[in-house]
Image 1 (cartoon, rainbow, N blue to C red):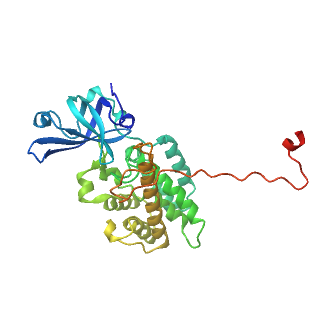
Image 2 (cartoon, helix red, strand yellow):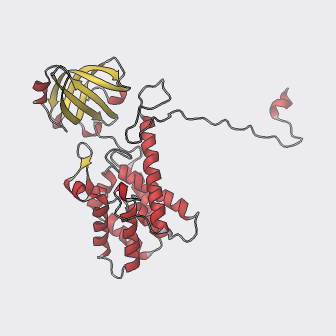
Image 3 (cartoon, rainbow, N blue to C red):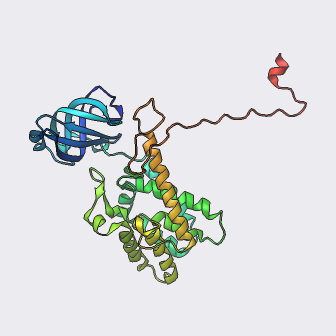
Length: 337
């Protein structure tokens, strides 16, 4: 039995439930006493926790990525909720439902995949269309692509996040390509769909979201270019210039060297892809921060380390103008008076 979820934890209340250990560190108080610092999670969010008593004993019971059943009390510390754990025990994986612990996209993955496939059908270029077909004809690739998160920390950090981000990018690409002249719509759409495909191997997402060895050593940009190159080699007659332009989009979609981009955008499609990717990632990141419960009485989020700011959570509700009456026309209400 899962017990309480992170999103349901209120300050100054008893906490009893099973959580996944995302982070685990041993610390020492100013008085020289060891304590455990934990970050616990389930599919509704994350929460910090501390073990102040018998930390050395409990440290030997469990490891990072284990499930633990905790008993403790919540409180607010430095603007964030945390649990002071009084007791805990390790839970066997067979006793938990993994769907309780990893967050998932808010939209059904099957429906997102269906919409993405409809967008791909709209691509006219026969070589780009065949490239996409080869990827999405592979059952294992589709399983990974529809399951993976889009990132480890900033945006779309949930199962199905990569699919949601790629679909959102494809929608945006269709809109902006119609707004500018001399844009290769098919190339931009293909880049939008495939720009992050390397994340299916860069990230691990069995329990917690983390980087694989390949991800740390190569990164999703390099992995993605290699995956595209392999598929292109299987398509007879694929134009060399089209190959170069598509690979440039993948290599440059982080925009600048300081963001880990091997190249900076040097084509219209690459430039648009970079800005659309940045927009979609940051908007989703803002929405995730603003959607967290936190202090329900405050208009502000907790301080976000990656964005380096507090976010204003309150949304202004527009007041619609009343419908104007035609000249000489009397409203029904007035006629009844």
